[in-house]
Image 1 (tube, rainbow, N blue to C red):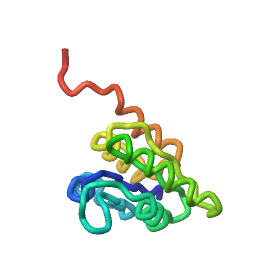
Image 2: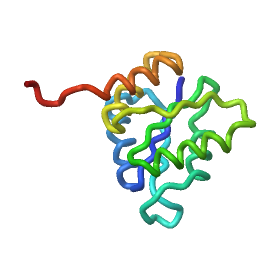
Image 3: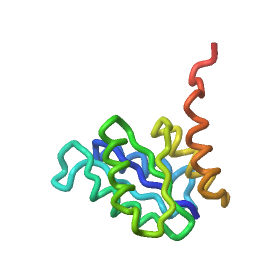
Length: 131
């Protein structure tokens, strides 16, 4: 099953999103939160993210979802750190909450890495309030 790594500047946000996703996609066990810094402060850490990617990977690949600009940059660095490892990993250009839920459900039903990435990224234009 495609794994997911949730990157937020806040550990509480990443863990809360993991909790929410666990309610909706309960069968998905490969979701790893990589929020905040090692000491609990706000920020993102490429090393922690790369470790989370390794943990989430079961061989089918990993989709990373990040919250803000430097979270994206830290995720890109984490992916670069794994270049020599045989892990298929993609960074989603998606809203982190909606994208995570869509990706988790897609992964849970057995979609491949590209389909899980697409499910997350298809959330970019979804309106929450109808016109």
